Image 1 (spheres, one colour):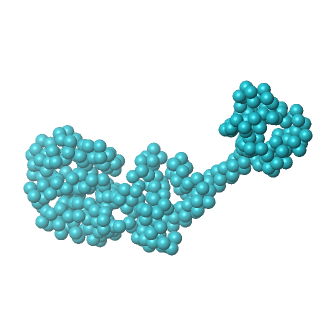
Image 2: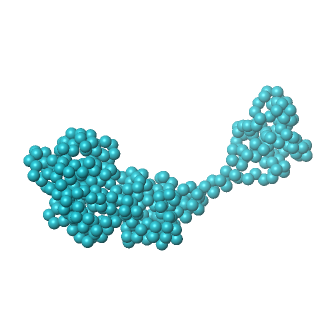
Image 3: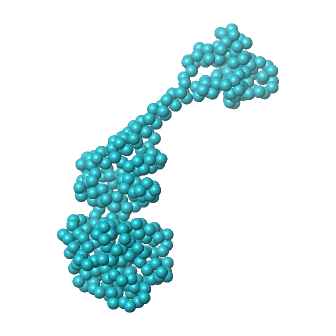
Amino acid sequence: MTEAIDRWATQPGPSKVLTAVRELLQERRNGNGVTVRVALTEPERTQVGRVLGLAWDAAGQPVTLGKLRTALARADDDLIDLLTRTTGPIVDVRGHREDTAARAAVAIEAAYAALTTIGYPDHAVHLARTRRWLGTDPAVATARSGDLQRLWQALPGGGRSLAEFATSLFSDPHRLDRGPDLGRLAARLLAAAQSPADDAASAADFALTASRWRQVWAEHGVNCDEVSATVLVLNLPLAGSAPAVRIAAAAAECGEPVWLTSRSLRGAWAPGPGLATVRVCENPAIAETAAERLGPDSLPLVCIYGRPSSAAWNLLRGLAAAGVHLLVTADRDAAGRGFLAEMLKLPAATEWLPGADGLYEEARLDRLTADLDPHTRDPIHIAN
């Protein structure tokens, strides 16, 4: 009977059925009620019916594993034996896949755990794990983790340029640029690492914007395009040896706004003698108008010009750390409210003229400018 079943198995209809059965069993779908889904022509269905029976064929029923097992048992045969004789042993494809996935999960988890072990904050690594920053391939995850560990151990960068820093670590000056995967991943992870846990996701989301990118690296001692990060100042007295000190002083003599770069703020600097309060705005129009109307008499002003750059943060944080009171304002659109909220987190920072009407700073220009006049008697004036 076995020989007859083997001949039956080679026919087109039964061959289709048994091929589909093998795929089901390899996926551990082996219950008697499992339907074997195959498209059979009438002649092929007749061929299958020679074992499953004329009643099955006439009723138009589907093939199930149970019906097939029962039919083969009547012929003193077994489904697994038949498949093994005709096309080889059943391979546990599902089991192999699950084992591979389990080993991959262990390797990927080890890659994340290594980041915590090396010193990355738990909340930053948790965010990286949640967003699968290391990828889903265990070999890739292990390699990325290794690169990030090497990076962390080399920080702070000692004031080196990003290109120089990348070359020292990876023999590639562009490896940590914003384009390559590692550069983007590193910036996000470092931004999350230096932020509180409840703000880490937001910090990581903004890490690839030009200004935030430079800021992230600057806060880890790596200089990233220092001449492109700028902040506008008017009559801001500074002391120390940094080039920005002399630049700001020369401009203040004639009451002219001047752009300071991250590079010019490199080195020692501090608030000038007697500097107690600095006003901070978003739009250059405020600085330009103050220079036009008040010139050298204008009170000190810092203009961030949109989202604060690394130069702006360097300046504002340095002033705040030295005890200078920062009066800050911005446009009252969504972006401006975001800038303002960030700046108000600085020590002793308060909002500048919160009661003045106007969505944009230009609508409040007269009131802001009047408040920069040390001789004003305007009741809205906030004394320096």
